Amino acid sequence: AAEADLAGRHVVVSAGGTREPLDPVRYLGNRSSGKQGYALARTAAARGARVTLIAANAALPDPAGVDVVHVGTAVQLREAVLKAAPDADAVVMAAAVADFRPATYAAGKIKKKDGQEPEPIALVRNPDILAEIAGDRARADQVIVGFAAETDDVLANGRAKLERKGCDLLVVNEVGERKTFGAEENEAVVLGADGSETPVPHGPKEALADTVWDLVAPRLGRAAKE
Ligand code: C5P
Image (cartoon, rainbow, N blue to C red; front, side, top):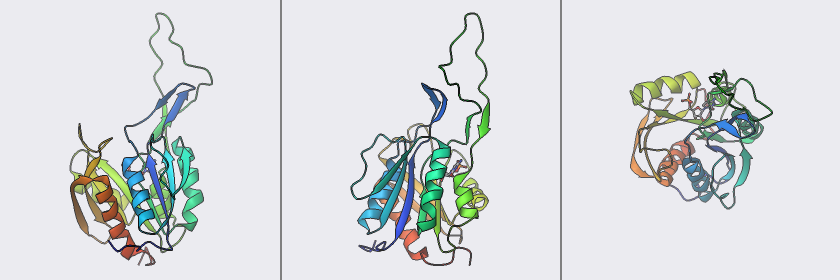
């Protein structure tokens, strides 16, 4: 990677996992640690970028020299991304965003009732932030990167997802019992809308982050929909 190949650029990275509250003490969440997104933020800053990190519930210290916006839910994450995106040269959506949230929020703690079965939890869809920002670009020359965790048919599902979401690059991970979530290391294939396929061998999340920026850098300033 060139030393400061992101100098003068503004990049927005989302990280962590959203939490969708049920009541004041409970939420639906996921196992994302935020480590991959934080690694993306740190490496972008090291390569000279101005970085806005939108962090959802990651128990990690704010990286030095990075603007951090802390959010909780998918709706809050969307607001923060939409606010930052118009000024961004690249947006990398590394956060695990809940696809659904509870349909209702109970203002008081939900109680168990003697002799009664629990109520089912009704869910509603969350907005798909990645599809939204990729489909309706704040700037035509913006580079938009998504992540996808897949358990099977990783490449075929990844390619279909890249097209569905309309992003420029999609980092596809195979998830399993001990893989990816919370781990220090990652392994992935980065798919490009131009048909490219870049395998990233098992290694530190920093190395995957640098590969993502290696792929983003030459795409910057080029019309996204040529
Ligand atoms: O559809 P799926 O959840 O597998 O897509 C993952 C990618 O889409 C990630 O980049 C994630 O940040 C983004 N996403 C989103 N909004 C959602 C769900 C996922 O931006 N509601």
